[in-house]
Amino acid sequence: MKYSLMPSVWITTVVLFLTIPAKNLSAGEALKFDLTRHGNIIKSAFTGVVAQSKHTVVKVEINRTKTSTGTLVKYETGDKTGLVVCKASLLGEFVSGEDQFRCCDAEGVWRAAQFLGYDRELDLCFLKIDLSDSSTQKNISHAEKTEAGQWLVSLGYQQKLPMGIGVLGAEPRVIDSSQGFAGLNVDETDDGLAVTKVMANSGASRAGFLTGDRLMKTEEKQAKKRRWLSKLLRQYEPGDWLPLLAKRSGMVIKLDLQIGTPWMNVFERQALMNRFGSDVSQRRTGFRSVLQHDTILHPKNCGGPIVNLQGELVGVNIARAGRTDTLAVPIQEILDTAQKFEIE
Image 1 (cartoon, rainbow, N blue to C red):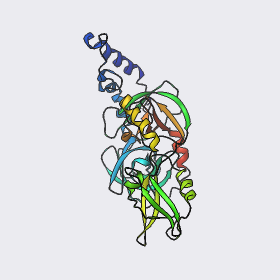
Image 2: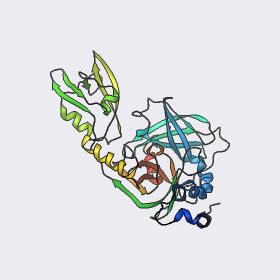
Image 3: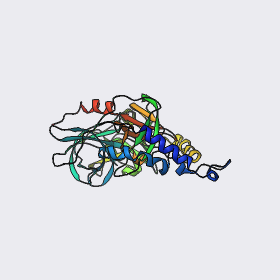
Image 4: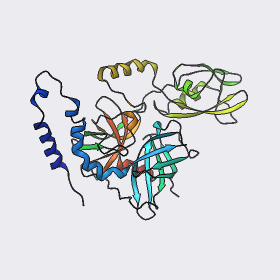
């Protein structure tokens, strides 16, 4: 049965504020964080929503090295399989069918996951898991519509309280692309496109590039022109992972480079964080369809679900874009995108 928690949420919230000692709200004194809607006191009013939707939050692991939050967006009752998505740029490397994935459900059970595909314009990795051994898995309800001004609840893995609560500010829209930065200087030589400088603290230096490396288009074909690299970089957003091949000491090696923010924008980002005391996601641009809400959410917690007050899945948090801006991919966009991947 579907039910609305709106009355109880508002009643609880009003009662909480009525019981706040007046001295805490005196003129000139800042409201304590726990008494705002971002604090645990107000979050506790939404525990019923969390309990109803906690089965949608999973943990995703890649190659037994890194984990991130994921969302179980669909459960097929026929063959008892689940569709899981997570924020690809948080996985620490470029994702492909060569990687090994597994997922841990809300009950703490790990299962192998099949890689279905990666959508760069959504920054989402799509996985399939077999849930035939689960006796507790519940169906997942999807929100049929959203309206600006409605409450949204962001969930965390095995968390009794919401990761955050917020209000939907804008219907689905496109977020334009942003210029990326690799941290490589290259030169055209008779022996191919050579790396002449690797900038400190850049994606290239963290990937392991060295001066003298020769960039390769394939394992057999060398890159020769700067414009090849420039054209390639324009296809990626800051925060994306770009797999590159390089020849070093006669051997071809693969290096995963995470695209960074241009140096001219670093100082702007630092000023933003200093002014507002918040951090933002590395990948926060170049999305073809996202909702915007005002939940305070740490970038590392992206990839988890947002639900409405009925516990219906509204979408998946994909980026912290500003002090009061969090972006989420709508659930229908995710389901439509999943159809393009072949499910065996």
